[in-house]
View 1 (cartoon, rainbow, N blue to C red):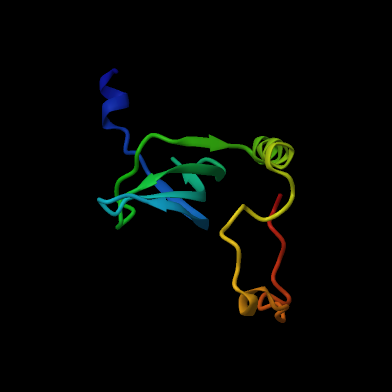
View 2 (view 1 turned 90 degrees about the vertical axis):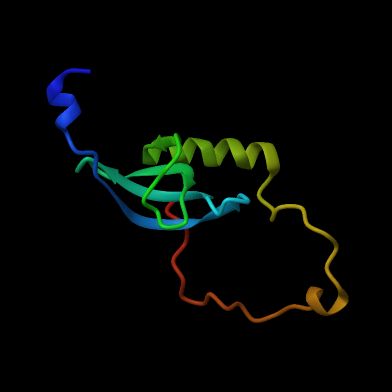
Length: 108
């Protein structure tokens, strides 16, 4: 790495957070976000973040086309239903009014 590259500041901005997949014992969370790195257009980004979002692990950034392709692969592998969970109780299985009326659909 040359001197110019060493002096270049690394900047990022989390433009939108889609959710947390898991959190480890140290409090770091694996998240899907829309992140802009070094002023470039934001990309879908999957990686671990420290609780204060000041530090990050290595991760993967995907374009909109790549995230759509991943979505298709996941649908093919797991189907379009909700993830498998424990059997709900009778009360939980009763139909309920949607709480997200008017919410926008996922971008993919």
